[in-house]
Structure formats: structure tokens, C-alpha cells
Amino acid sequence: MNRLVIAAALLAATAAAPAPAAAQAWQPSKPVEFVVTSSPGGGTDNFTRMIQSIILKYKLIDQPIVVTNKGGGSGAEGYLVARTSPGDPHKVIFGTNNAYLLPYVAKLGYKFADLTPVAALALDEFLLWVKADAPWNSAKDYIDAVKAKPEEFKMAGSQSKDTDQTLTSILSSVTGAKFLYVPFQGGAAAGTQLAGGHVHSNTNNPNESIGQWKAGQVRPLCVFSPKRLPAGAKVTETQGWADIPTCKESGVPVERFQMPRTVWLPAGAPAEAAKFYEGVLRKVSETPEWQEYITRTVQTGQFLAGAELKAFVEGDEKASREVFEREGWIAK
Image: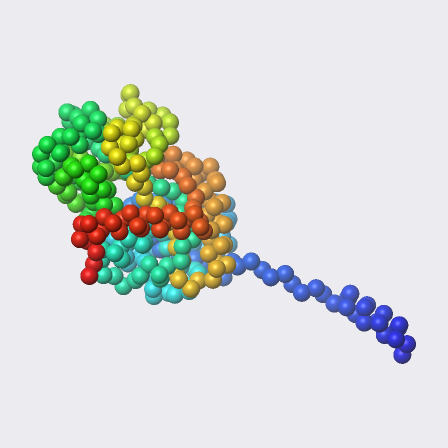
């Protein structure tokens, strides 16, 4: 056969052959389990279920989503899923900074290395609260009173060796004010104790004490944030969140103490799966429903992933570890 004819035949055959299919981006291939590292009704539970509802509304994941609460051991039960399901991209774990801090203060069945970071979507703020009729008009006034009578003032908090006690330790370290820390089962209980006058202060998140502030039972002295909270509707007749000074501008040298709301996969999960969930969560953070949730719960909306999330975790871990070592909380 003529060489020219053969070449033409081969060219025609090549053109007629279908092109290789483009590689499909990773998608869940079966129902996805959202593992919540808190009990039903807790802050992490509300965070997770809000995300689930937005995903369902906007059809951001084609598979069903099942929410499972595993809050035992201050959330360790939920993180243990990463250890028992290595590499499984259909188990998404929702938590806070306890993901990387719990292993420092307790002997657990998981290590931080068992987790793959995906994203953080919000930062919980912490405020210094006192009873509404307390005699102190500023955070500095209160700190000075505590310094004058060491370990006579009770600071309520959520659990032991957790964020509230860590913040109390930082506050004592930088001001010299020595509190008697009293742990309770959650911020709601700490708020009730303060409203009832059984303790002198607490460091509750805004959402944990807004009802008691509205009712005139407690009042905030300062917020542990680099800037004031966003302006909005008044909570009381005279004050809203933006009227609360930062602790630093109140003369208390703690510029920032915030807790991230985090999302993780088990270690060994495909990188494409982590990117898929990162993309889904970024879309969630851009919806009006998410903005309403952030405003209603008085959190700071901030999406962190990749290098930004890594840097935040490393900084938070370093600062917290210094407290744990000073207080002797490191689990042996």
C-alpha cells in the first residue's frame, strides 16, 4: 500500500478514536459522617449542624450526611474516630483547638498526628464577665481588686485544663492577679453560677451569657480580642457588643485569646478529599445563612486553610503549651 495512503488511514483512525476521559475530581462515594466532638446542643454541635443545613440547602455534597455526637472525654471520643478509621475520607470531624491541645493534658487513644487539617471557619471570642451589680467599673478595677486579695476571688469556667482555665492562667501570669478557679460542666453552668452570685467572674463566650446580660444579671468588662466586636443591635437598653472595650484598651495586657472552630479528616485521607471539603466549607462560609449564624452567635468569621491554618495552629499550640508547662498540666 502506498505510504501516503497508510499515513492518511492512521490519521483518520486516530481522529475517530474518543479522547481519554478527563480525570474526575474527588467526590464522596457513599454517605458522609459528620463526627461532632461535643454533646448535642453544645457549641460544636450547633456549628456542625449549621454547616450541615447549609450544605443540604445548596446541594454542595451529593451524598447523605449523618451527624454523630461523640463528646466523651472533652471531645477525645470524637477524635478517636480518626485513629480507628485511618484514611477514611467519609468521616469528617468537627471540633475546636482541643484537637491538638487535649493530647498535652491527658493520656488519650489518639495523637494529633492522627488528624488531617481541613479548615477553620470561625473564632470564638472570650469576655471577662462579672455580676451586674458588681462594684467594678472596668476590667482593670476588677484585676486590682483580685491582686489585693489573692485567691479569694472565684473565676468560674468550663471544665479543668481547658480554654477557660488556660485563659485564667494567662490572665494571672500577665497581671499578677491570683484567682481561685472553679470548673463547671460547660459555659452555661458557669454563667448560672455567676448570675447567682456564687462566683465573682467567668470568661464565657458571648453566646453563653447573652441571655443573662439581657436580663440584667451579668455584664461584660472587656473582650480578649485585638479589636472590638462588630456593631449591631443593642443587647441591653444602653449597650451592644461594640460598646465593650478590648481588654488591652482596658489596661489588661492580653491582646488576643480566641478559640477556632475546626474541621478535620483522619490522617492518610486523600489530599483530593481534603481539598474537596475545604472547597465545600469555603462555599458555606460565603452564604448569607452562615453570616447570619456568625452574627447571631457573636463569633468572628474567619476562614483558615492550608498555610494560614497551619500557622494559626502552631501559634496557638505554642502559647497553650507554655501555660500547660507552667501549671504542670502536661500528661506524663
